Amino acid sequence: MEKIALVGGSTNNIGKAIAEILAGNGYHVIITSRKEDEARAVSENLPKKGSYFRVDYSDASSIDTLFSFIRDKFNRLDVLVNNVAYTKNESILDCDLATWEYTLNTNLRSYYLCTKSASEIMKPQGGGAIVNITVSSSRGTKDKFSYMVSKGGVNYLTMCAAIDLAPFNIRVNAVGSGLVGTPVGYREYVNRPYENGRIPIGHIGEPADVAEAVAFLVSDEAKYIVGALLPVDGGLNISM
Image 1 (spheres, rainbow, N blue to C red):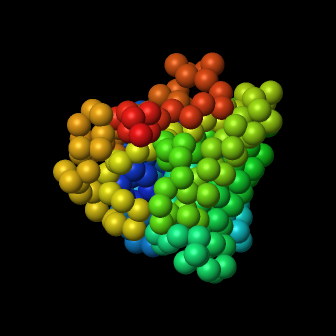
Image 2 (image 1 turned 30 degrees about the horizontal axis):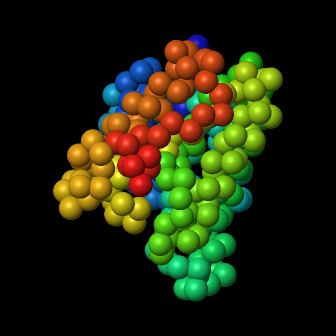
Image 3 (image 1 turned 90 degrees about the vertical axis):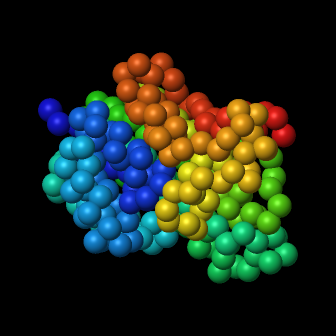
């Protein structure tokens, strides 16, 4: 039976790399984006052609429509990768209510809604795997207030959901990305040599580094890993 994987924010950078490696591993990957034409183009050029769907992860009704599509077309889901992020780069003093709500809705509420909807599909089919893309940092960060709060929430969402869903053979884990690929808000992958000195391994990562970690966590080789946060950051967090 063909396995189905849903990857959020999958038309560039980390999300695209995850979609490509899962497709290469035989999954039928559902590409999602706010821009339908970009999602279509990526889905048609995967190692194994996938599907696509336009979705705004800040909008709960849009997420509901996405999962209705998945139920109607596939009636199963084997892998969910939550990978969306928004940041305005503001301090708490600069964070107005609109920024707070949009950031939390995009970065945290969407993970909750997608995890809940995916698990409702996975439970009757006997299980599945969910991976949340978050940050590797375990510290506060200057001028990234709402973004870092939302990602801290993702870390605890991962652990709590993992406990709740483990009895149903639904494994929930997270990959904590360090300085990898392109910063949030930029679309194309760029090398960032000015940041290399901060990283013990000596350079920023590539999107494929995160993608390989995701591919491992959703595989049978990781069947005993539940509720983990796997840092992919070249040792950055432990060195700070």
